[in-house]
Image 1 (cartoon, one colour):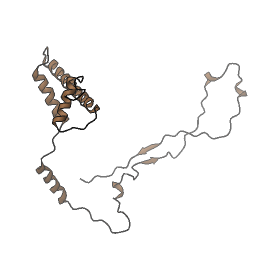
Image 2: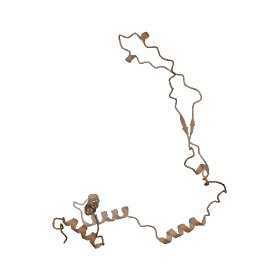
Image 3: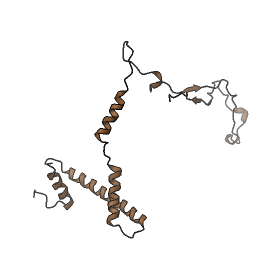
Image 4: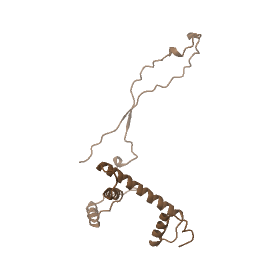
Length: 177
């Protein structure tokens, strides 16, 4: 054994021997800790799922069937296989049968039609035609008892901006069937 292996935990020794068996000789020491973290997290997830399956089945303890089901569930939802080569080739043949549209000769880069671009506006703003009359609200609670309401400071003639609701509409285009 190499130096420092005596004080290394058993799980870390297993990870180190797995790396060596796969031909990995040069790695940082923290790689072992990262693999251990991944390993522990995976085991906790599988055992938690197995416990849920055991409780659902009404069992008092987790058995091997629960663990097998949890592992199979984890494999089915975590890893997916690509489709077979023949299926991909058939899909590619079908797609490549459709010819590309002809480009119009002209200067510059040909752009797609306006309705297919993401930078074209897809909304319209509708502003109300007439403005609502401005109603000035006064709060009687804000007045101080010793104040004379007629002695308030004169208001300046700066028009206040009204908050008018804006309507937003989206054009509905017919989609080809």
